[in-house]
Length: 146
Image 1: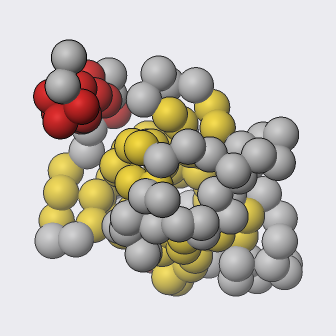
Image 2: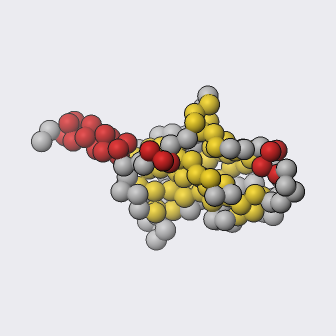
Image 3: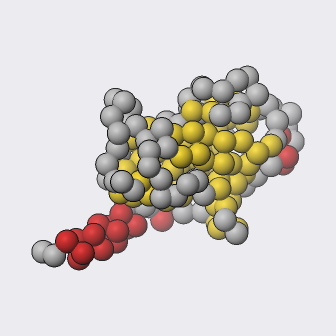
């Protein structure tokens, strides 16, 4: 098989592996869930690190309770690769964005260094960032280029 055609096949397979139930509504450059937005990571493609901006809208906080946020990175086989860290969390930066409580609305960022959970650099290819806010999930594609 020629190299070019295998790359195209990989891209098609990568897109097919994201379950339809995880797709969310696109609005401009953001993928929107109810009360939050997951923006496109930047740079994208990236090597070796990237930032993941997201917004928690005021309606998420109408109950007066904090909002619980998780961001996870998956490969095209839907295997968990990494959990990014919070860059500007109200309690301080550097915490994994894994069931992390945010006390109020705002624009925030997560950071991924391009390493997997074992500290190894990930391979070039397509990855998916999943954001879960109070149990509601949305997914965006990201590309690691070498």
